[in-house]
Length: 577
Figure 1 (cartoon, rainbow, N blue to C red):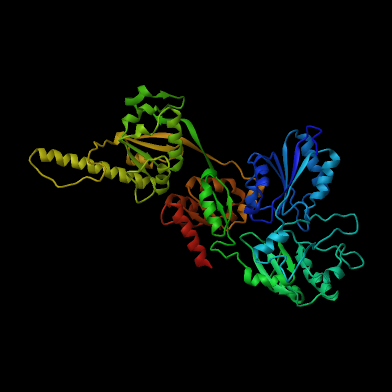
Figure 2: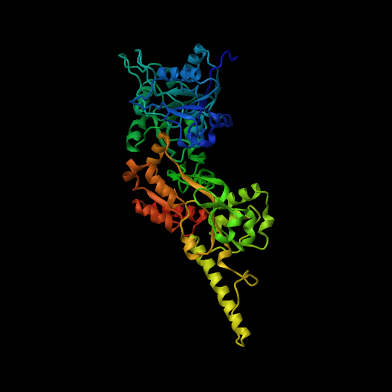
């Protein structure tokens, strides 16, 4: 349709059945640039996390007994945003596919009537995807040559609207409308009972006992295989097998609850052989990852691959400074200019004054090299210098810049790094003293640590590259060293409602720093008493100490590495099961 005005454009987007990996590339691209996202409660937190962080997020989520926003109001809301926001991208994000019981047609008609340009972005329908994730094909040669998608809920005969219809693996529990005749509106049980194909019911778990009995009454074989698939395509997926005649009792006995779909027919038997989705070590666990956004992808991907549902919830944001800051040293004041806070802007030309560069984080590495290159230098200025890293993660980041570390402590903490450098300095001092004694006719067989033989080490020639929130641990151990602040850490101010709800229902929180723990408690202040009963997986003793202070039950990695942390998480839940 041609655009005849300057209204915003509305995209009716299908979010798929639940697994964020099933979101289409087209949908992802639109969500990343959307100015407004109008979303249902059925959309997974992982998909909401893909939206433009600056987008206005509007929750019109519908509950089975309480509808936040009526469908008619949603229709008008889309038009309102389009008219009031010329040129804007407005995403209407719906579970499954917008045209499969998603009421996308009603929304599209409203947009047409208002002259608003729109586009349909299809989603993977749960009617096919969820059975597939359970190993059940909806059609199979010799068993079923057709399949039929049926809603377990329909409009009532009066003017009241029910708002629970949706194509999603996580639909709301619904009740079939029951007019005075006792027959659900829209369901032709006579036809369905004699249909030879596969029947897929979206929604209506609360009505399934009634539906099963009516199908039997109309002639369908009571022994017809049937499967209930809860939370399909998500880490919480569960399949419960039954037959038509045992449907009601199975729902009660196995505590089958919405969200779930029901599939009936001979193809259900194939699920016993073709079920491919494995029960992974972290299946059914929701974990909150609090690392800074640009650092969380690696651990998030690993936890997801192990079956967890990961909610990326950065508690801090890091930002490189335009130039490094350093507390002024009188002997180098001529190369540094003071700012109003009595700090100095560092001059990369002064790197010649240092023999050892000590990095305490990956952020420090990235910021230092970004500033170095911006100042017109390259890695050649580091020739002949020794490089120290607080741990293996930072060491790995340095390798990305072609820099190999000379010193990495066994204890991957600031204290561990400081004590290592302190011991190297003390050893060098001792050797110098013994060499002086040799000159006086005394001998010594003491040997130097590798890499220090030819160095005239001086504590004042050590440069510490850290962030603005770094504590004084290193400076207390190395009081004559110089510290450059190369990046700043800023706390995240707040969480959107959808993310707060996801965090509150999580099984555990993953912390990589004490500052993340502190800000987590601050943001969730009113709910924190409840959240403190959660498990906290921590990297390092300082992080563990901060988590304990707020009442978390902590589990700490053996080493300060992501490998060790992931291993510890898996070990914990394996033992628990």
